[in-house]
Length: 418
Image (tube, rainbow, N blue to C red; front, side, top):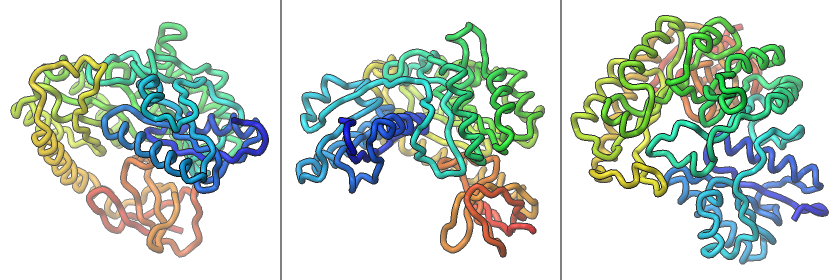
């Protein structure tokens, strides 16, 4: 597969954690002599799949079928399927997709020294752990990825040194649950200690962003680091999933309602300029209209700066799959629409507070003749953007002060200051 000058293309689906795996896959193949090319020029096609929810599984299967058609047309010689889908359905896939030459489930966790970058040159993702120990009743991740596995600290810091040398402007630290880092290594929470080491080795990287903080393990030590360290984005990615006590218990989510409210209040007081991003699930089995109204009221009261909503996906292999009182799809969709309509109103009001202020903006590129970028309150690919008018030339990775001239539901517009 890897000898000679084979030309390899990849489709990386799903989350940024998959993207990091894809970078490592391509890095290994490149070291073995393969040429990394766009899929239309490849003779070996790789799909790194996602199988988290039904929509992700469908996207993965569709991508495989597209490559199978290219193989039938003689445009591809081999197809390799990596990641979550074969981890979950390996034997079944081999029977149903004979066009695929190899299925590969879990791969080595640690970073390789020379990955092939799939992100724009000015930002990167750093995965510090894999798998999960939370065992939420709706989630199939432990079945796919296994329990928590923290990456070796030396491997992480080697990758950090490389990215610091490349002078990326933003390093996004990711994992299924990065707050659990170290529990499997030494039995204690090691995230804050690791972050201090990362900070010490990133003099050339101005922004560090933390993605996915489980509310049960967000402690004062971590919040103090976010508050006091200038290069750590004031962005708290805190998925709560619901607020109704009964639903949280059925989800096997910790902490419960009272502790969630106390934690949010603590964050607001300790880091008043922080943007809190959360995610919620609507249509969980037995969620009543009253339960849903409680969730809406919670969102309305807290006014999360950033919020994503998911429609509950009934996944075989999870405890919730067999729960009674499944919510009809039509009701799920109505509840999803209600959440997003409410959040649009909240986001519009949140953005208005930036009007007339000067914000630091990381330039990502151009769109429609103007520059586009993000504030520290916006993660790549998932949050809003800033449209920047500038009289001087800017390039991706530049950090510029921008005076905000207008606000939209999710985005901002402004003028770069001299």
